[in-house]
Image (cartoon, rainbow, N blue to C red; front, top):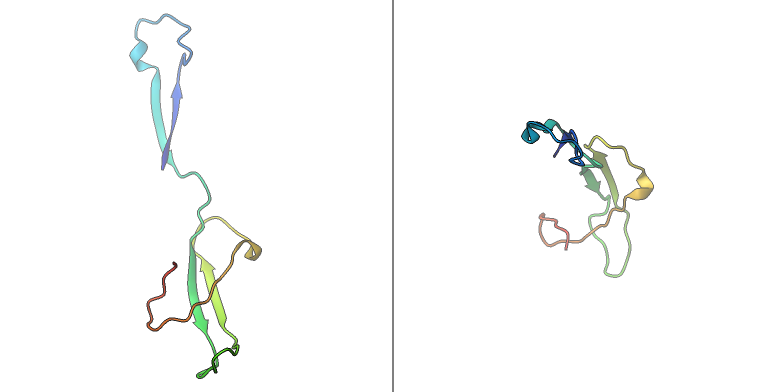
Length: 89
């Protein structure tokens, strides 16, 4: 979060009777892209896969953020895990 601010006589070019009242902070604003990707589904029709073979995985995701994005700007990676806790890295 950032605040909008303004400073009168920012270059200090004017001799004033009160130099301490030249700055004022205004409203708070959010700056930047607000993308919040959420995985909403991941599934496969396969219940058994032979080692070194392939299978199809389907996924869906949603952007809960306020900034739009293109699908080409996003990559989904798939992992096999021994438990249901999926983390990156």
